[in-house]
Each structure stands twice: as C-alpha cells, then as structure tokens.
Amino acid sequence: MGRFTGEDFAKARRHGKFTDVDFLTSNFSGYQLVLEMFYKDGRPARKKNIYVDKTRKQRITDNVNNGK
Image (cartoon, rainbow, N blue to C red; front, side, top):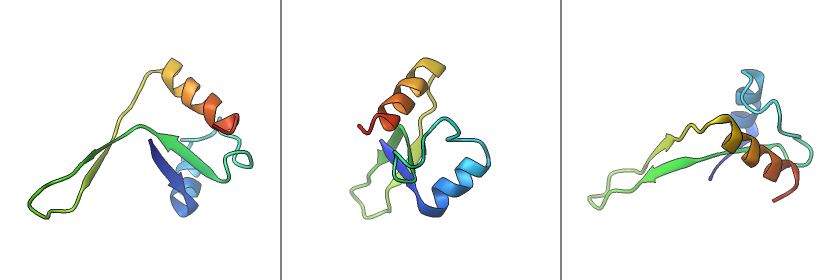
C-alpha cells in the first residue's frame, strides 16, 4: 500500500481523490495500491499506482476510516 501524506495528500484531496476518507481518523493520509519496481543495477525504484474497481476501493477506504 502506498501512503499519501502531507502536501501530496492535500493536493490529491483538492482534486477529488480521497473525498471519502475521514482525514482526522486517518491522520491526514490516504492509501492506494502501488507496484514498486526495484532494479539490481542501481537505478532508482519506480512506483506505479494500481487502479482498482469501486468495491475494492471502498474496502480500502473503510479500513482507513476504521483505523486499520
């Protein structure tokens, strides 16, 4: 799970990404599935967001709002 905090969270929320997340319960953070790719030859790691359907997104939001 990738965690969005600080200015990244605020910017994403302004653009409508984490509107269902209770920001006080989640400590001003939002979560999304992320694929991290690491390389052996010293290149920096790459991150790609994984977009899921509504039911899985709602499950992630419910877990965040419940403090998990």
